[in-house]
Image 1: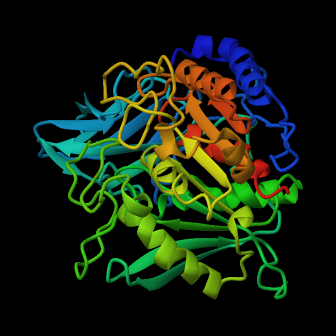
Image 2: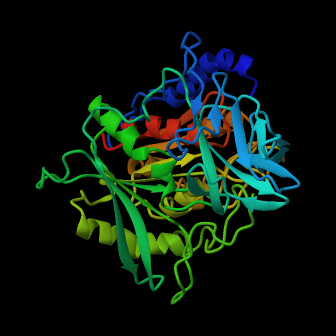
Image 3: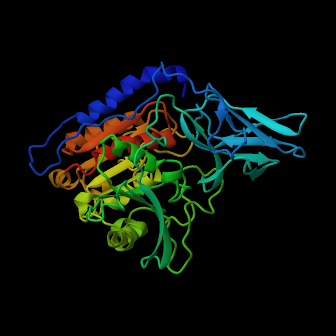
Length: 456
């Protein structure tokens, strides 16, 4: 991303996404969903002051590096006096691949190695160290799952933007629960967000959003990187969303009797958005192995153990990247279970697995929009009867970042145009300005998607 171009693109891209989202506002069918206004996520304004240089918020207390500079560069420091070569691996702004690249660090007289990056885009970023060719975690900062293994992280602030920050507002709870899935004959771990007041309002029931991670990740990431709980707490405090339960689980499914496989465990480091060990693929009866597990085990367990509003009109599914593909694969063949669908950087139309429209291998050009969509085949044929689809699905939300290599906003807009022309009236498109296949795109996507849920 060229930062000088960022602010020039913001207005045009937001206007384009909103324009497409508002096209063909209503169907004459009284049972079809009522069109809603889509509100873009807040962005830094050109006049917002820079945040002074500071240690990354993920650092161990008292550790100064990684250090976030005032111009959004990042300075790394790693103590390895006996090493011959030390590098830091990260995906940096302007890179044409999602594969983290190694950058050589310089050794000082004190035995510490340093490197300062180019300016980085706002939000969460993974990194790790390579010491004489071996992957090593930076001991001065926290580690998180990503790329199929543990990584370190840093956070670039977006001045003036605070919708994902911790604020003095009522807070929900993030619970960790285990349940036994007969489908896979294994114990499963889930993260569950309950909204503020859930424990006090013991007679109130809530709708549920099932939120999926991406490749090389697991059930932790929508809390640790995505800050789902903080985004929803803040939106609730502003009266912009309905209170809801959010369920986060890994879509890895092991064979019956085998230990549950974590997301991407066993995948090669740097695998990026690829699928890790334990993922059973996409499609098939019931939406594939994970679709069957959701329908037969997860959803019934949640409905038994939490105060949910049951039925499709009170249930949503969404996911990022691979999780978007899972959402398309599962929800489209289970429209008796879900009325709200969110495909964040994945899952729209055709071209990658279950349909990651515009997706391609790292470094490759995004897939082109299909010349003519076939409603009988895309999305497992769920749109073959547009009138029936419009009745069943209240929101079909699709998003991309504006930047390459794997985001294809123009293709996504063309795809929506084709859906509208074919009679699908309930799609929304959001383009995240200045971001690529990264967490700031998906935080913004959640911010825009969540207010569309459960309004009828």
